[in-house]
Length: 246
Ligand SMILES: [Zn+2]
View: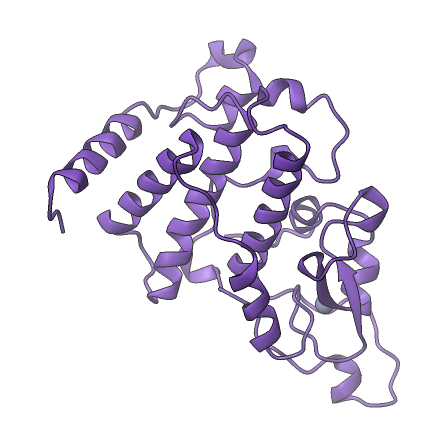
């Protein structure tokens, strides 16, 4: 519901930028990489890129948290306001405090598949690539997922398995990416330039678009692992990941 002039302004801003959206054309082959990534906003810098992904994540988060299967105008306005604030530096992401609370309050289970047996500690951003040993980079992972993910970027790994991470895991990951870029003074660098650098993560795979809302979850549900169901029997293959791209 529009309640004041500020809300009207947000809506006009969103409508204006939404109207810029169009389908890729054959002549787009020469367009810059960042233009291909988003046909909605003029994404040029790392800050804008992360802001776009994070704002879209917040929109999905809000809808899924409300149990909805489609976006409302309010969700789009949340997204527009957040993108504008983050990309202009007038807003900042909240700290990882809330994310740590989620982790501590969640059932002890693999954050990727929900398995509760044979858990290990995984570096969300691989340690070998520069990920830290600090708690905000550490998550529970079953042996199978940990071994499969290895030193692969989260989004790259999920893409290879045709899955999508839980929204709160993606939020944690996106904050880690943003913090790294801030600490290395990359936020205001041109995206196309930063792409030439070796980073501990796949910046280009930060998602702009998300799977259907009814296939997204805030956090994985804990499930009994195969080893718990058939104790003593040899575990075969990797556990099935619950989130599948539509
Ligand atoms: Zn797992």
